[in-house]
Image (cartoon, rainbow, N blue to C red; front, top):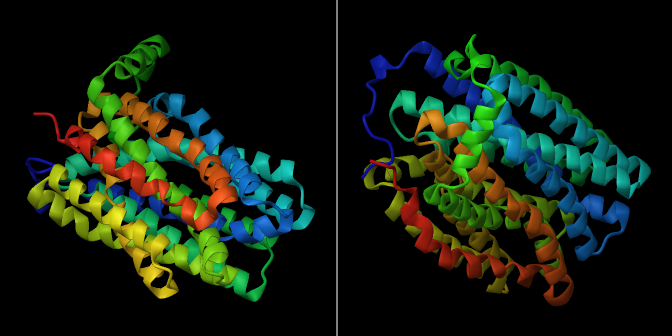
Length: 404
């Protein structure tokens, strides 16, 4: 069964919906640019603060904690303020956090300042993530075919750009305290522009106050009791861990495990994101033809193969090919989990919020888990946790099937 039914004819899609599609893609891309820019400079931050893998993992936990704290109420905030205003306010937090973390690490060498900046960065990212996925699902329904992975592909392209710019900045010796604040300003300005095209139907109606805060809280609590929503959340958790492990650690793992330079490590992360981008761009055709369940099952197996090759190859070029397969394999799970949570528009804010809370727990537990394992077995071999979790997640794939 196709993941999105009742396709709309191109002539039936209004200009406002097409404009909203572009606006959502811009917001996704700029959010990816911010995150890719940060993680491309993690090796430089580690060096500036003289951190072990375990201590670096605990520092990255601040960003994940901010995201997890934001998630329980982000759906309600988006429902109350509208998705456009929510992503702008959230991106203001993202940009502020990026600036504070960059200046604290590079200019001051102040670990608590970096942690505070990362918490704000994570809080803004978590809130923006829920709001832009709600908006993306609304646009997807109005267009009538699978496009959510392409929004996440835009995020991946933004991450590629961020990783590439980060690699260039590292190569030319541009200080983190200069690079990240410049990125923060560009991301905030671009997001404000992109959000102007969001669907007006997703904004709060004039009588939005008629829906009381208590009623919104009841809807959120009801979503926490839905078995399908909880299982989708568990599926997204594994997807987020598999993707986040590469985002957090693949650059550092190649520096430590294969002896490459900091700039080359950032480039390897770019290879991972390129793999994700290809999967999210081409995967929509496969999803519309064969449906979510068989396509997601196949891509998960591809991710298992890719991570195993990246860690065990023993050869740098072969390992990089494994990273590309890893990115291709994890490309669809997270966006299609979010799309599945938003299958019914009237319940989408509460369900997406619940799924995001569960999924982002991976970002909370992942950095310290892999960091502590890295202290014992090496950062590279710690990544073998990823296929160990991916294989059981195959049993959860059927819950993403659209309800009849």
